[in-house]
Length: 272
Image (cartoon, rainbow, N blue to C red):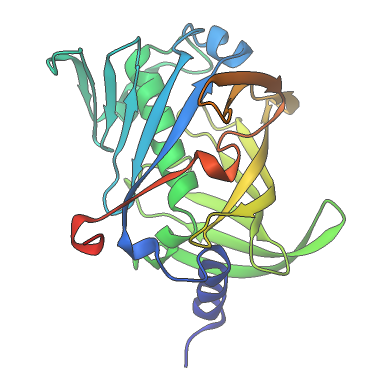
């Protein structure tokens, strides 16, 4: 008989992907435009401001950013390596084992372009591939009761990631509503320091034509040294009907935007 955790993981995956098409996807492409005080604090104020696209892969830990760190260039995150390519495809910057570079930069120093590439790479990969990543046998999960989120009683799940897994922290906590959709995510931003705790709220879910559920609104707050502060204000791109880009600012940001933003890229073997 399956454990309560196994049954629960099946429930939340079914809630996110009721037609079970996730395994047929090779990657997901989303537009990305981000800017705000956090980026200036890190010394990289305009690195995502020009707009571009992030292609997030589902069968391997990989994210490709277009227009990074400037128009026509490309940033590639593959977990243990980050690299930047110029418009001719020549590698002009790379870093092996990028996570280790943060150890000498506490408590909140300037980050370079490769640091930003690593952080946004692992963050977007994990956000997009959750909860499907919980099928990884090396990731341990435990139901720890209930927790109130926005006045609603939610299932509370503790997740322990294996050593060396590229994510915010080894131990993370997730809250799910009655339907099984994620509404809150708690973690420590280990690369920034042990006092940086994040709370990531997801809401206003919509579904693609394939039935996949996406949170079209997100709100992130970080508590550092016991003082809460807004993570950043993001320029939120959204695609108008005539394919022109526009943007808006809001501390409750839609990093994934309206459901029509998504391009689901199926595996070649699955799309013929």
